Amino acid sequence: MRQLCVALGIVCVSLEISAQNVVTVSNGSTYSYLTNSTGQITTITNDDGSGVAFDYDSAGTEVGTSVQAGPMWLTVRHVVLGNTGYVAAMGLPALQINHDALGRTIDITADPNIHIDQGGEIVVEASNPSWFAPHSWTAASFTYDTAGRLTSTTLSDGLSLQLGTPDGAGIVHQTLYGAQGNTIAEASAVGAARGVRIVPAHLDAVAAGLGFGHQWAESLTFETTASGYLTTAFDADHSPVLYLVDVGPYRVGFSTDGTPLFYDVQPSYESISEASGEEPAPLLAGVAPNHIVVVADGRAGFYLDHPADSALYSAWTELDTSGNAVQPFAVLEPSSSSSLSMDTNATRRSSTHPHLVAAPDFIRFYNTTVCVNGYCWTRVWSEWVEENSGGGGAGSGGGSGPPAAGGNPGAAKGNQIKGDPQMSAKVNRALTNAKNKLNSARCRALLDQLGNWGKLSDVMKGRKFNDPAAYMNQAMSYLRGELNTKQCKDGDTRASTTVGSYVVYVCPGFTNSAEGMAADYLIHEMLHSLGLDEYPAQGAKTSQQITQEVVEACGS
Image (cartoon, rainbow, N blue to C red; front, side):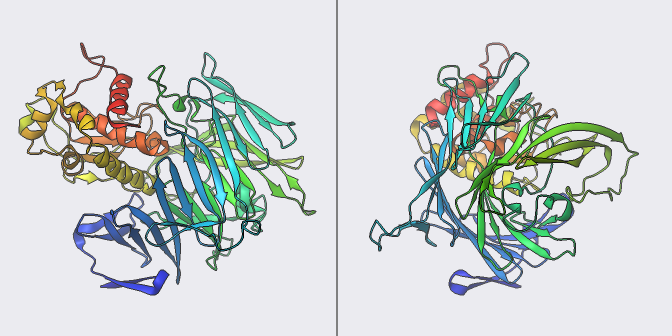
């Protein structure tokens, strides 16, 4: 028996840890969780004794996450209303993440006049006369071309990254402009490439202001709890200096006394072009900023967590010693590779990449050129490269026999993604969203079409399910797939399965999907599970055509 006390209201919950709810992550750590009567996770206990607690609104939608860091509880609240997402940590201005009708992020606005209460209600502070109230501001804005591609990311002070159209080889030209319209830096990289993750936590935009200095990556190390909701940065003496709380597409940095310091938000550039039926976002996956950092004082920055070789991957605004704004940037450059003998104990690690991996074959080195106010220096980063990186197995789905026999569902049903809390949370939200979409008769009508073994709805009934949402949650299993494997061949693949199978492999690109599109991708895979074939099978629709049908029937 353990006891967790949530700081808000000092609500204490006794936890009876149940053996069947113990999860082991990739590095061998474990966490345990409890669920309520509707199957939602209410509390998590990590093997180090720390915990996570969740708040839900009256409809059962998650609206708040509290994470234990030492004796403190750090709370982040988040809600979605229509095309706008909100995230708030008390002490920072709330952020509004606004999307267009296709689910693409169009701007991120900071508003100190609103906050989110424990029940998920947005509260607007209107007690002061409007001329005394602090003003909201646009932290970042985004523009797209007629094909749906991101063309620019502009921060609050005018710092802007412009992206050209991919050429025949997929190369995208990047131009970084300063607040005065001056060209700060240029680079060209293969847009569709998914590069190396150069750090486990990216702090360029805030390091100077927090006193870490621009060489922070050489002095800090990072450790993440088993459940993945808390990452702690340690100095050279292994004293904690920063807490990072991850909640879905949002990260909030807290000081060691519990003061919230900055947001790190993942925008969505993903949609299906109504004209072409194609998804343009993967063409820019290695060059388009996928994180926006907003600091308490209004400054902002952006970065890519997996930049392509030779790409501009980070830019931000900070204040120099005289209080003047400067606009630094960083570029990733490939360096060299070093072959290693197989290390089955996997004891080697880099201070900037502390996560253990199994049996690395070689290390690939990268140089990053970082420039601040005209002064540049080079860092060296290393990436472990593994020979076997396929997405593991959890039972095979039977697509060869009559589906009424069911094939063999994975031993564990539902979301079985371990070691990637961001992806796991994304799948949970997508399944909830898919359930809501499938309440629509038009969306459910997708099951009236014919598959390999007849009408899809009849196949589902033969598998003892009448509700497609229940089938998705209770019959199917969702596993983490690895890039460049059979299941996730490239950065364009969001999820995959085989016809008739109960097992869906969720690919790395899924995490950056718009919330509505993530649900549509899982509905797409459900159709395959029930027997719907895909081109190049004779007479079958292409993957893009199937996704477009799901979007039209269920909404994006």
